[in-house]
Figure 1 (spheres, each protein chain N blue to C red):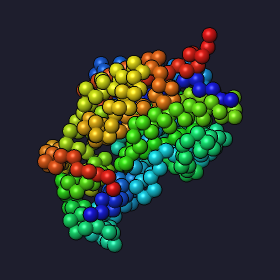
Figure 2: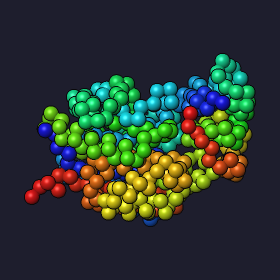
Figure 3: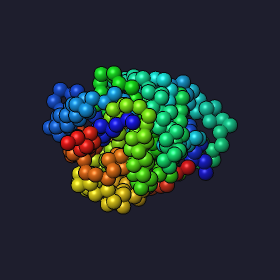
Figure 4: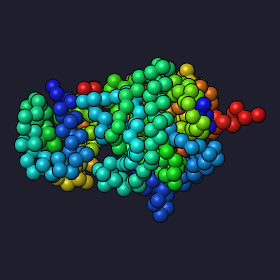
Length: 95
Length: 285
């Protein structure tokens, strides 16, 4: 597990517009060479926030990353976000 | 020797300025805006010539590759917030000169008085600094010394440590070799959840908020430290440890009750606390 690397990706996408564009254009390429598990890599590429949350991604960063990276309808995202992560309770997010 | 004249604690919610500016804000927001106006006047009334500002960075620059628990900024100038915060919240900028001499004095005195501060010569101020500064000193006419605390990346120091660091900063200000009149502003918050299942518009735990503000109001420092554990704060909301900055203020105030404090509970955002210790008024006859 590489929580720190997941957090690092999310933070770059939040604070750096160029990183956001690069991630949106080609997430596989953006994540190349990073020390991530396959599960983490896939969850980041698919903006699978529920899996990222379950794995202990920092919730503050996840909250910033998800809507920025989201390709679908943001209103739908807002409506379902809490419901989808609720089953996982409060995973430890310490790195 | 420098003189601590006033201590003020307020929220740094980046949503709060926008809510105040709405055409018809809800009554609790109007009241909170009045509270903050009175905090501004209170600080101005004590005529500080230096503001020490204690707040957090929201993983914008201090990150888990190199995370300082307590850091003093000593670049010549500071400004903020970050571009992505402006895009998200539309919050106003803040620019200030830094009193580098005082920053260096505090760093040196820290080592003597039990706090090995990290330091930085290149940084920005995120919304935790710019929001309270725009409320309390919108004139941008006073030099500041920013002190950053880690309340975001566990392990964060326990409440006891925030209290001790606050006490140490009090002594550091007392021993600073200048005649400066020092005002302290700290920003934090009460219960809040971001990116977790409980996230909503209002406080994630109003009971925690009321309890802590009651304890602060009565100066019951030991109980605050005992109750504001990591587990209790996380149960209140997953970003609640930002409360620790208020515990630091209790240390600065030597554990005494504030001269005024309170909290508003808007429906449209988390609780809005305020607290002030009129330090100079206490020592005047």
